[in-house]
Each structure stands twice: as structure tokens, then as C-alpha cells.
Length: 193
Image (cartoon, rainbow, N blue to C red; front, side, top):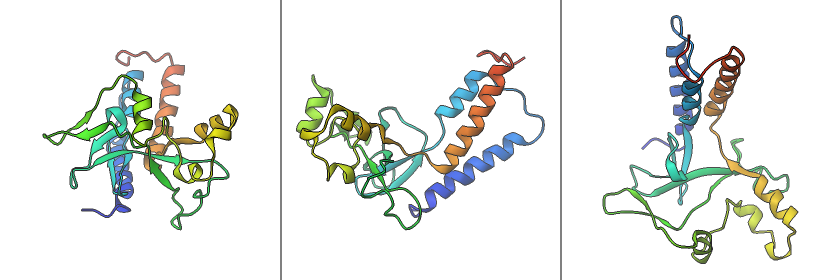
């Protein structure tokens, strides 16, 4: 298996290769729908409970099965709170990543992710040891939610977001620019003229 540090580099190389191939020759203008579809399919990072990394296209439900270990892998999150205890702990300059593990997911007999449907999803997630929303484990360890104001809880919630691979972030910026240029030029969602 490729080392987990090599996966983001592989994703960057694949995106660069796709950009070079797409840039060869005269490129026809794309529709706004085509640009949006590419934005939605940019590679993302998934982590298993044990920290194994998987770079793949985004999945519904933010969970996939890691093919080699057959474990559930969840979308990677990052905390940007200025007082996060783990914010600057990694020596490689990459942010400290974590998952929001939903205990209602499991792997079925065919090796596919299956979600257990329950009447009160959030209550059941908490009952099984999860949290109602993505929460940084380092920040959670020093917080006392019973004493927090709604504004304080909101500040922590707003500082947690999906981690975006650097290559995907760069490509997203290019696509955003292309989208705005097409939209400004009267781009439609149908075929380009």
C-alpha cells in the first residue's frame, strides 16, 4: 500500500496531469453545469479510525470503505480555531486532521457501507458516543459544553470544516475563475456556443 504521505502527492500529480491534458490544443468552452460537476468531483481525503488515508472522489454520506483494509473511512476535517491545542502540532506543516465518525454506519456482508436508519438520528449518535456535529477532539477535550453560551458553541462549530487537499483547492480556484468568466460572458447551463 502506498504510504499515507504519498497519497496527497499522487492526487496532486493526477490533477496536474488532467490539467495538462485538458490544456493541450484548443479547449472548447464548457457549460456552467460541466464546470460545477468537476468542482463536485474533485478528490477529497478520507481517514479510517486508525488514521489510514484514502484519496478518492467524494461519496454520498461522507463515508467510503477503504479497499485494502475494508474499514470505514470518513471525510477528513480540520479545525481552524485560534486556540486549538492541536492546531500547530504537526511537524510537516499539514494541519491536524480528524474525522466525525457516525456510529450508525457499518459495513454489510457484501463489503458495502450501510447506514442504520433510526427515528431520532442525532440522539442515537450521541447515545452511541458520537457528537451531533463535527467537533475537533483537541478542542472538545478542554471545553465544557454545559457552560458554553450558544455563541461560544457556534464559534467552535464555525471553525471546523472539511479538509481540502492542496491540489483540489488549487483546481477549485481555477474552476471558480472559469465559472465566473463563463457566467459573466452569458454562459448558460446548456451547451456552450
